Length: 161
Image 1 (cartoon, rainbow, N blue to C red):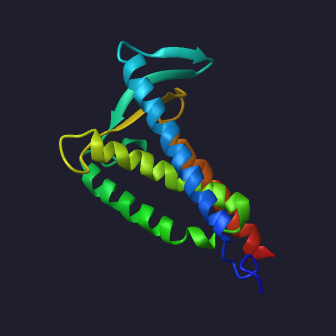
Image 2: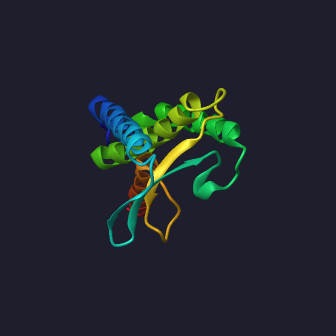
């Protein structure tokens, strides 16, 4: 039985998780840096309902749990460690890219909590993508959402076969 048949990723697929995660972190942090500079004077209308509007979030998804950023940051740190541990078990390239997106998104938002605040894990997460019909989010949030959906589809279809 090969590693792939046993549900264990090859070393190159496991490395792909890390490469994708690093790319997501880089894009996320660069866009947040850009947003803090370019949107400080107000929002920019892009097209239809898409605006770029600088906000910060000290809570969890959809601004729930305001004031519990330290706890959310701690949970994110645990999630990152678990994802790193299980990166060798993702099914194929699509799974590696999806897991890398989730890992990179978690690391991107965790970096905000670590380095943008008044204390350890107390920093606000920078959000700036405003669809005007959905809560404002960032690149890390989008990567996490898409990555989770892809992983659910992959594991669901794998379980059915």
